[in-house]
Figure 1: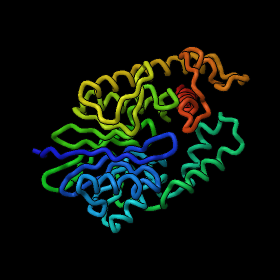
Figure 2: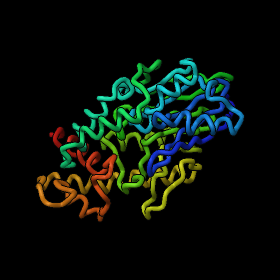
Figure 3: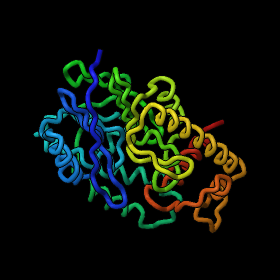
Length: 313
């Protein structure tokens, strides 16, 4: 049986956000997600030193998905391990690690279609240049279903939970049902107050898999996502909180889906609303957040429903 190992959150600063990574204190230590370019030196190394650990000893870099606030520090962290750590990512999100331009392409294909910002692509390109420490080839591609050995009988199973991105995965410490889900569990969103995902069908399936199959005793989130009343969860949830967060995530997805389908059936209309052409969705949900505030989950998510709706006979 896999023995229990300690998990330590590692917090790195970034603008209005704190970026969260997690240190798995196994015989072959692992860090889940890497923040941005400055995170390994400014956040991770001091935090590890404070608990008597060294960043040079990390042997696994486990990336839950390819967004810049999760992979931006990967190259820098890999360098700090003497390039000895294995860098793991799902094959569908590997382009985000290989090329900064992949982040611009994602913007243009999704939320960029609705934000009415002629300089939007240039802003995303500048952000990618600034906070991604380096383009690199991952050392291990996964698809879900793999088991990774961290030594001493400690294993991590890889679960595909696409939806937030095509290559989102959860890493689960076997035996203690500790699940690291990155941004695959959105609840009611983070600072923007809206859940963000690119494929609503896959997102719901991933939540159901976590709820029914993984059944986490400990759930580690990529950000302090919010409850229905706007109060944030922490990033370390116990079993009851994990069940609640998954249930609430499924509930809000269902509400967004109904509003989106009503809007799409009625036909999209351009208006002066900042939520145009999805103003009806915001109205039905009572959403009053800023839809332009990056990463703009309102338009990211609604673009996903539109894509799915257009493909459905």
